[in-house]
Length: 194
Image 1 (cartoon, rainbow, N blue to C red):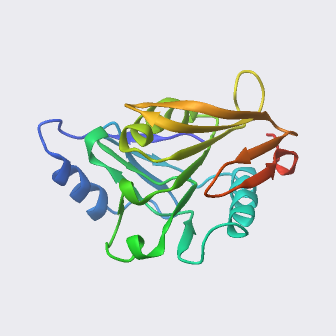
Image 2: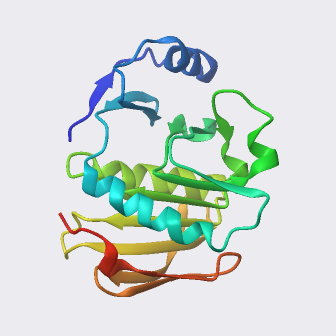
């Protein structure tokens, strides 16, 4: 998977960038995000990518409160980092999600999950976690099929500034625990590796 970046005049403000993101006609099925002020268009994720997200989502549904929801295509805005992200999974209270139109404010997120793709893994490893931490999202799960040390799932938490603390690292095949309010154990042996 590779991404196409679309230029944007840095003199224009956040509102103009969001309007551009909302009003353009993007290729059907693509994932369009704003990362560090640059519109990035990626093709639809590969089936293995989607299997990982679906398996995590299935487990999360067993533990979230009735008034929370899980989204796989919901954009969240982080204006302070010039970001409009579409995490692979976003968990948020439903009431917070029904009061806006095209995107959610990042403050509503309780957990975000990103599953890396080979060509744009840097965004999931560097740009997005910095923005998510700066926005105060309590938990960030990075499922990195392309990590140099081999496929891993890393849960980050305790955001301070734009940095998370790694809470748990599991190589594929090991168990990963997501703490309260989820109190969930995920068996990463269910994840396809490549």
